[in-house]
Length: 210
Image (cartoon, rainbow, N blue to C red; front, side, top):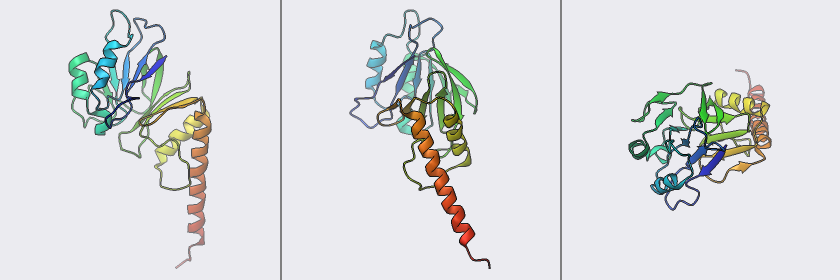
C-alpha cells in the first residue's frame, strides 16, 4: 500500500487529503482518496500521480466526517473523476453509499474496517487496516495527552479495540502522521481516559449523602 499526503505543503487551510494506492497499481487495486479537503492544488497532483494504466485515477472517496475542511472539494472531485463516495452521514450532497460501523472497504490493495467513533462529530469514523497497522483517524482525537475532557463510550471502545490489534502508523486529519509508535500512543490515551474515569468516580464516592 502506498499513502500520499496531497496537502502536505498546502498554503490554504484544509484537512489532509490522502491518496491510497496499491504497491503495484494492479487492476483490482482501488485508488482511494481519504477526504477531499479544500485545496484545488490536489487536482494537479492526482493527475500527475502514478495511479495505474487503464484505471480511474480516483475510484472512490471515503470521508472521515462531513466538516467543510474535509469535504469542501467533493463536488469538484466528483465532476472531474466520477468516484463512488462513501460517508457515514447523508448530510452532504454527493454521497453515494452510507457506511456502517464494522463495514469493510478495499483501499489501494488493502482492506480497511470502518470504526464509527463519535465525539468530534456524530459521523466521525476511523479507518483501520490491521494487516499493515494503519489507522486514518480524521479529526478523532485518538492521541490524548492528559486526563482531561469527556469521552463517548463508543469512542473509548474503539480505542480499546485498536489497543488489542496492530497499530503502527496513524494518519491524522491535520498535521504530520505518527509512524511506528501508534500502539503506544493509543495505550497512553486509554490510560489517561481511565485515570479521568477513576478520578470522577472518586469525586462521586466522596460526595455527601443528602
